[in-house]
Amino acid sequence: MPISSIWAWNATGHRLIAEIAYEHLTIHAKQTFDHYNNAVSSVYKPETFVESSVWLDNLSYKDIHWFAPMHYIDIPYSTDGSALPTVQKVNALWAIDNATKLLLNKYPSDFDKGIAFRILLHIIGDIHQPLHAITKVSTEFPEGDKGGNLVLLHNNPVAKNLHAYWDRGAGLFMSNRLKPNQIEEEAARIEAKWPCSVFPLISDATEWVHESHAIAVNDAYHFPINHAYQIKAQQITEKRIAAAGCRLAEVLNEIDAQIPANSIRARTIKTRRARKISNNQRIAFSLK
Image (cartoon, rainbow, N blue to C red; front, side, top):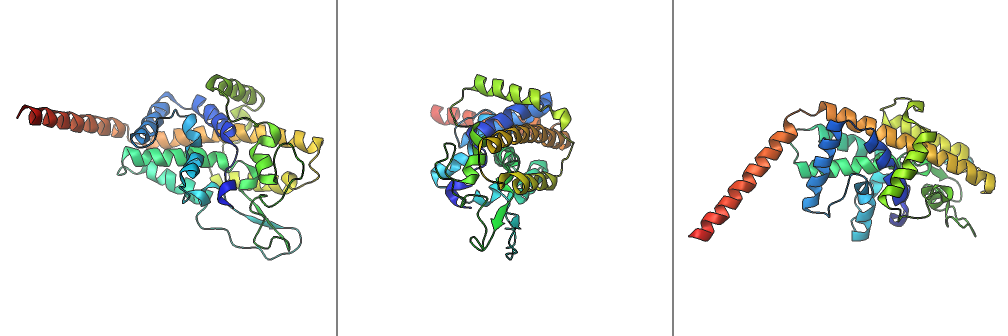
C-alpha cells in the first residue's frame, strides 16, 4: 500500500478500540502494560494507554516508514481470473506474532517491551478493518488495488477512495479531535450495542484476518456506495471496533498472565537502584 494510505481506522477508531480494551484488562494487566508504555516515554513523548494506540501511525509524520508493511496483510482476491500475487512476508500477522514473543521474552528491556506493546495495541486494531486484509486483483490492477486505495470515489463526502472511506468508519470517524471523555462515552455506546459476550473467544489472529477479508469481499466491494451501503458499513464498523477492543484485552490479559510475577518489580527496583547509584556518584563528584 502507499505509505500515505496504510493507516487503518483513523485516530478516533484506534482510541475507541484501546478504550474498550483497557476497561476489560485485569488490574494486574493494567499495571503491567502501563509500566511498559511509560518506559517508552524515555524517548518519545508520554502518552496514556489510549493515546498510545495511535503512536505507530504518528511515526509516519517523522518519516519513519519501516513499520509500514506491518499495518496490513494483502490477501489477494479476484473476480476476473487474474493471477494472484503472493502475500508479503512482513505483514500484520508477522507483527502480532513477533510483538507477542518479545513481550513474553524475559531478556528485552522495558523500553523494547513498550515498543512491542504499542505495536500490538495498534496492529490488532488494524486487522479488524476489512480493507487491511485484502487487495483486489484485476486486469486493471494486476498487482492489486492496495486495499481499496486505488478505488477512487468521486464526489463522496466521506473520502476520496474506498480504503479511506472505511478508515473513517463510513463517516462515523470524521473528527480526530475528540476529548478523552468523548472517547469514553462513544466507546461505552458502542460496547452497549456490541458487548464482549457476543464475540467468540478467538485468540488466533489468523481468524480475525479471515473475518475481515470475508467482510471486504462480501460487503466493502459491493457497490454502489449509496445510503444503504453507508448504513451497513457503519454498523459493520461499530461491530469490528468492539470486537477489536475485546480481543485486544483478551490477548493482553493472556500475555500478562504468562509474565513472571516478579519480573517487572525486579527490573523496576534494579533501575531505581542504578539511578540512586548514579545520583550518589554525581553528588560525590560534586564534593571533590
